[in-house]
Image (tube, rainbow, N blue to C red; front, side, top):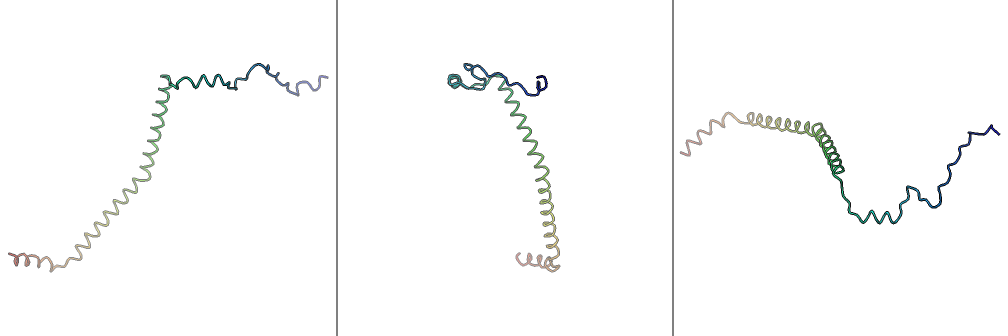
Length: 113
């Protein structure tokens, strides 16, 4: 009977009935862990602080680069448009003023004296 040997894997032996598997949580262990207060060790506190600082820096980098790429060009364009509007209004004011108006202004000043 040597033909079929090695083709069928052998099943592991079943665990003893009185042993609990490592994945089981017993009520006594659960009660014991909830009785003690939750505390961090110094190493865990330092590790959490480093992770927080790293994630904060990464978030700041993403926010800053997004702001530079998306918002700064918009601000520059709005400033250009505002300057163009001011220049157009100035040119319209120069073109719309008549040459007689400045001559009339000194005459009005003489009348008020």
